[in-house]
Length: 171
Length: 387
Image (cartoon, rainbow over all chains, first blue to last red; front, side, top):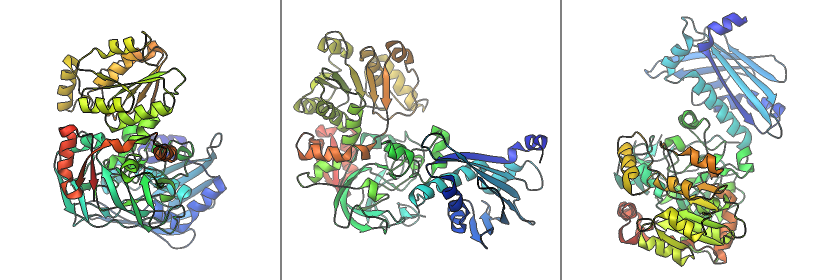
């Protein structure tokens, strides 16, 4: 895609960055683990790995709609991970994650860029309507979840926990 | 189990809810021995903080006994009597490793609720609205504590439950506020507020070597407690505080002023009336009388240490700070950085937080406890619940 096209579809672009105090190669290896993808996107979709490179995604819209697609990770250099949806995706998109050294002792910067491109245009709004979440929120939360996993081995959660609703528990 | 739940503005009820369980490998489950009210709970109860949900379990200042441990928990064990800071901190991220525990990068499960408000998410906190993580609170028989290796501190022999309880929040918050003042020999420190945090800031300033500590409040029993701790009390309804502070410091002004009051400051005069009206209309959440007074009173080039919890405030006289060259330090408590030394100070009798525990209730009577605490009835400084 050339620069002009990038400009005209900017609404469809969800970008976010975080810095994680770990080396890039360790973070890249963790990102590419199939179970990592299932865990960090769990707020948005059920991700079922088919093998090391491909996965099936299912997500639910607010009105009960179900959307499916498959992703494939592409061959890239050691400072990047790229993936895109395969033909027939309900929500076509392509993503890239770049690993850059952070200054001083701060570790590695992760720059995530997901471009949604389903037919029909006005893509960011469409995705927002489908899921009631803005795309940037989806990818930023995934990055925060990945940072927690990389640093602590766990993802913070309150689900389920005691509450005086829904029969005594927050589910 | 039984738990004190928030069901809407000023609607607190003790209800039966599910027991918490271990969700992550470094979690523990605590049997709560004591849990206490905090002034910041009043902001939630009064509806000044959005993103509370009906049914949330309240309480963020507590201690108890570990009854169950996750598989990654190595530093504490079942049966340990522990105190836990209010902010949940992983111990692994850049912020935790720089002793900025309340800014932990990894403990907030709902960062998307907070990032638009603050730019970046803070640490999660127990029972402080969903924008701050939505973790269930401690006014309950049991509580789940994540990151137990970092957040659970074994209470040593010689430190009673009532003392350890406040080393969860009031003591580390107050002590941190005094630490922010970078106290040098001869320094005079003025503290606005003689609630739990203010009193602990006063004792903290003494431990850190202040020449003199001045305590400002309006409630006689609170001023009496400050005096018992060794501070010089000032009743702001009876004297002009700024003039009184000049008198007590030979015209210099306090070297540092600590605001331990926050958004529900009482006050006098027109500015207070203006603040109350705007707060009632949700045009601002804060009243701010104490903070403005501290900004005026602090000496040139001094330090303003802000511990009171604030949301939105207008009429903030920034020029006072700029023209006087004041250093401002503020944070939610970085408790994990202070708890070990505070437990030692308590063991040696230098820190006496048990004095804050003026009223004790069963969990079933906790709504009554909050009522007494909120209205400061019968000299209630802190209501303590024993589930």
